[in-house]
Image (cartoon, rainbow, N blue to C red):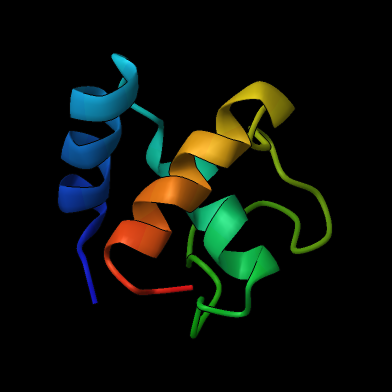
Length: 69
């Protein structure tokens, strides 16, 4: 399984931007890849910084590259 840093580097090299870790966590959680909730999360039902729809596909491509989805 790839680290958040590896996913960020892959997205940066292919799409030219560095995704926030919370965006990666959002996409991973939608695929059931998050094993636990962050200890510092204020509300378990609300995301402070959800992944923008226009960035989601690129993050999913990186997850596919690492065979995570």
